[in-house]
Image 1: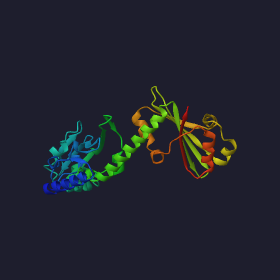
Image 2 (image 1 turned 135 degrees about the horizontal axis):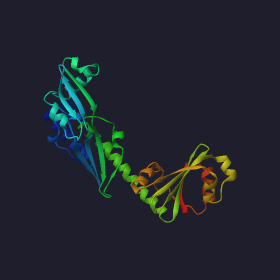
Image 3 (image 1 turned 60 degrees about the vertical axis):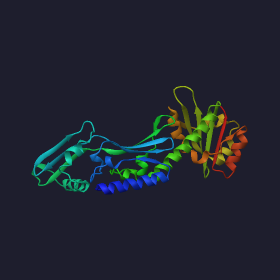
Image 4 (image 1 turned 90 degrees about the vertical axis):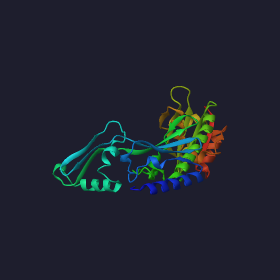
Length: 302
């Protein structure tokens, strides 16, 4: 924060060089960044964007600001919220000289209970804005949620928001892997089959059964309780359907294909080429229980 014009330009040039090396096109102009003001409270709308493969990641400031500034017992600026149109910068920059001064005023305001009786500046911010990342998949023409704000960490600096380009690239690449594997899984499900994922931890096995449906619900996930291996060895079912007859489960629906892709993300580290076409469930399952593998994934005719 608090960068002058030269520092802003130099910082953006460095970011563009890093982006180019990673195969990313960074669209960010120093003209869109105020000198000495980089806290997002002074901004609204899109700051810039990154284009990587078939994805556009726009960095935006969203949310309405409601604030009042006092000086020597008097209210001098009042921003009542409404549409976020950059009013904070337009109305406050003649009094607040830079980010550092804003931080100073915020700090000293914490201990003041009666602004009309205090000398100097005092500020009340009852509503503020934040930086968000919107990811658009050009191939599907849809916005997708990659939780970039959560993964990258929340900050209020509109330039720092572009600092983690390599991490953004990795997150997008991971999503592409998920998407590709989900297509593979969907191919199995569309052949009137279901997919079964068995995970083993010590002597406990958890089973996930995934069915693709053709009506309002896109897919149904059923997660069955973990069961104990020795007990299962004495009573293991001969056919896949039997295991689902006596185990309790909870299920949830995926309403859209995008949600389906999102739900498959936890399985992607295992899936790759491990999916089997199982024609002998009994032998396959028993070998899994007795063997060293911790996961079994197969499709079968439902």
